[in-house]
Length: 432
Image (tube, rainbow, N blue to C red; front, side, top):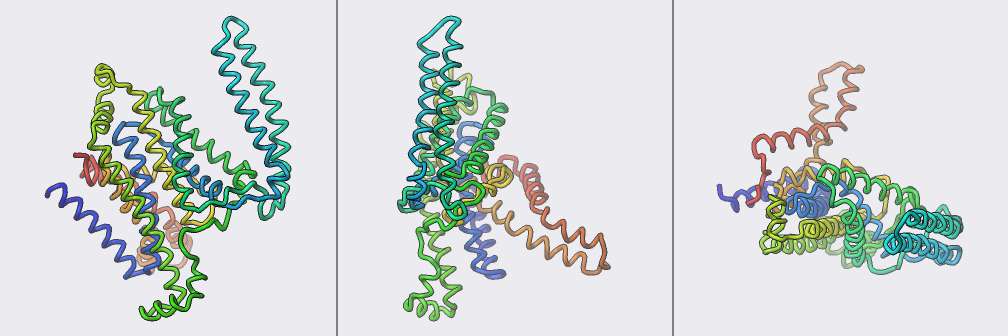
């Protein structure tokens, strides 16, 4: 079987699985799987750019996805005027003081020498810290006290939500630059530990800084790039068209909204996939793979290995940030507690490994297939376990077996990964 026929066959199989979900379960479920599959495929593309192109072991994907979600709040939510009046400027002044203190410490370190250099830097940081806390904490208390039950944060810029997607990429790229300048000189295992720790720091900030995005109180009612269901149901023309297809207005409006998201997500995925393919086949892509395969030889040829690693680390993180913004837009809310490493880091790695590391189409295939399996394992497992235990007497063992179905997801992901690594070690669509 040729590579092209293999790819077409596997994508057709995934399409049949999603269509089968619509026929056997509901088209709402099928469209939901499709939408999250598109987002997951985009995340897998970002990780594949880092690992498949350059061999960078980044296990901090969750942090960049969360920054993309934060960008939706900061960009599209309307500003809270009362909060800005109460302490918005003080928060900005405190952040400016903190940044100025760091810059002053760096400049002092570079321009002084001798035994006093360390003491001068320490004094600058100490004074700057107390000034920062004095100004910043007062602003935070004032902002979070403004109608804490419904707002208690500064809000955003009130711009169209579609602008938040590229902003999410830029925010994640900025964080990746800071992380990369610090951690890319480390060995691969230390890089993994560093990125995982930094991702946890990002999530901790989102959970605790209520003034920024309400923390664990969540930000609900995010703007949408598609119509609201209730508006469609109130439109006589839409109701008439839905009746022509034999659908009630409620079902038709839900399907229409999810189909609108699917169209937008498909456009973004196709654009990023085309750009990733062009990058892979360009001299830059060949250079990145040469660095991945033999860094020593690449350095001997005069290549700036660290600089190129920083480039691809920023690009891959930006793609994950865009995907995170898209996912938060689809959910309609920002929920910091929902960002877990198992879902937003390690499951994405499973998608890349199963699909085929180094192959962009493989990453997309892995995103769709693994997300489908992740969603469908629990209901299928419930049905299978119900059938297996149907002849058992009521008791502790039967209850335990039925309650253990929720853990079938982890078991199934492990089995899929082991089978793929055993029979196709380079993934379903290996790198050419």
